[in-house]
Image 1 (tube, rainbow, N blue to C red):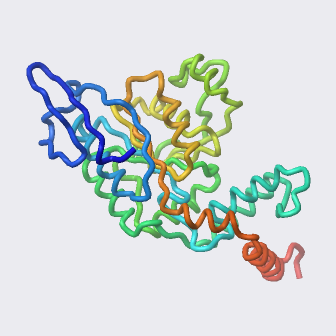
Image 2: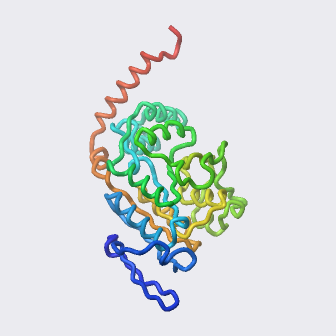
Image 3: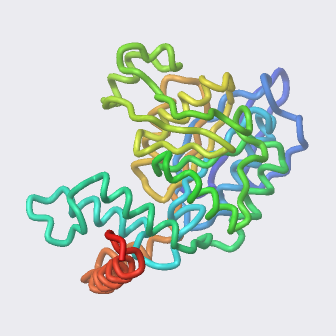
Length: 315
């Protein structure tokens, strides 16, 4: 669905207004409690500018204080400069580990794999898929829109992730959800036995077939979801911070994540706009179609170098 075909007619008292993506609407003309709820929608785009356009539109409709934007990180805000340790490599290895005969898996131990990923990400340089992305994030923050990063990475990768964002001029302490410092410790986003305590209904938890929760963390505007359903983590955090919004926009390169965010808010009146972001699609396809010889060689070289520079036994 194209952003340029989006239109809606809203009635308020005797006022009839047709709103198009390119239309100019004076701030506050139709916002806050007076704005009728717009229908939730899902988009697919290779251009980050589409996300900004829609966020600013909804800020005009509902008021910036009533809009929340959430960004995935890997292959959305940032991508690694090399395949080894990158998002598509991680997904390939995760799939290989589950095979009955994981010939190409570098390990079958999930915790060892997590430690390897941490080492590779620590040494990796990253870049925005589009050079304009950091400026887009800043503009939406300057517009007064609450902004968070929502990554599937584990909480123990927080420092590494923060440095990568900082190196690329992205700062989520501005317009953060709740306190900038967030919460010093990890926490559970829900409990299956009492979802109401986390702002969730039993029917929703049942419909999403949620598994036992794992610890997540939130600090300095960055949510480390640890592989848990992103929409549920976001909704739980909104409950924890006692914040409510009329509209949520979420952008992620993985369609299952955008669908999960939509599903997490189906029993609410919140307008949810999700964007499946495809700027890195071609690189992902090239990696998937390759024989993986490049990353296999890179991993072998990396392992030899690490063993030589950092021997397991003292010399």
